Length: 358
Image 1 (tube, one colour):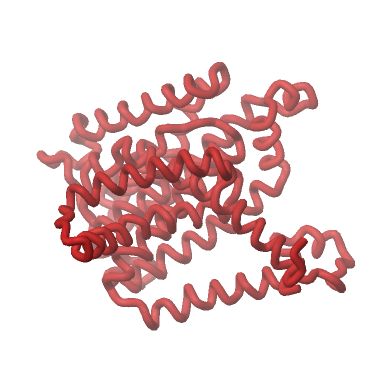
Image 2: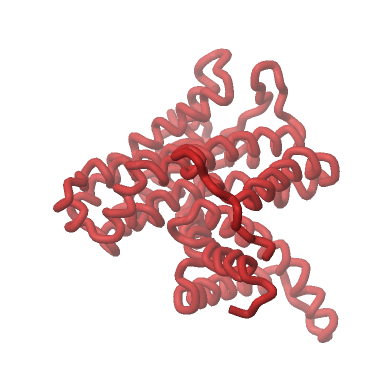
C-alpha cells in the first residue's frame, strides 16, 4: 500500500526510462539529498564528519568503481587498493609539481592515470578468469606497493615515503574544515553515482552484464569481449582512482603507501559482497556497513565486557572485527548472495502489498 504504483502511467519513452520511475522513489531520493546537503551539515559534529561521513562518502565512491568491475562485468579484482594508490599519488604529483593546478583537475588526472594502469593490468582478463584473474590483479597491488615505496620520484623525493597536501581550494572555496570536506566529497559522489547509474543502464552496461553471465554467448551475439572487459577495467579504475585521490587529499591529508595496502583491496571487495554485487545502491549499503561496524564494536564490546565483569582490550576488539567480517561474508554468500541491496528490494516488494501477507 505504501508503494502502490496504480495510476502512475507513462506517456513517453523518456518518462518510462527514468532512473526512478516510481513517484515514491523520487520523493525518497529528494528527501535523502535534502538531508545530506542541508540537515546533516546543520546537525553533525566535527567528529561525526571525520569518523563516519567523510570515510563513508569516499569508500562508497570506491565501492561503486569496484562494483562496476566485479558486480556488473564479473571480473574479480584484488588490485583496487593499487588503483586508489595510483590515483592518490598521480593527483599529488600534478597538484604539487604544476603551479596553480585546481584540486578537481588533479583528482581527475589521478583517475586518468589509474585508468591507464587498470587497463594494463586488465589485459590478462582477455585470457584468464576467476581465481587466475584475481591473482593477476593482486600482482598490480604488489607492484604498486613496491613502486611507491622504492621510486622516490613518486613521493617527491621524501625520505620516509610519506606525502602531504594542504590548502585545498576550488574556485576560491578553501576546503579546510570537516564541513567543507564533507560537502566536497558529497558533491563528487552524487555526480559519479549518477553517471555510473546511467552507464550501467546503457548499452555498455548491458555488454558488461552479458560478459558476466556468459562471455561465450555474448561473443556469439556480437559483443566484443576485449572491448567490454577493458572498458569495465577503465571505468572502474577511473572511479577508484578519483576515490583514492579523495582519500589522500581530503580524509588523510598525509599518507604513505601502506594506506593503500592489500587490506584496502579486500575491504572494498567485502563492501561489494555485503552490499550487493551488481547494484549501485549496494555500494552505499556496503560502505555504510564497513564504516559503522568498527565504530559500533569499539563502543559495544567494551560496554558488554563491563557488564559481564570482563576487560576487553583494543586488540581483542580488532580481532573480533575481523572475525565478524568473515562470518558475515560467509553468511551473505550462503543466505543472500545478492547482499543488503537484495534485502532492501524484498522489503520494497513487501511494502507494495502491505498490510496483506502475500
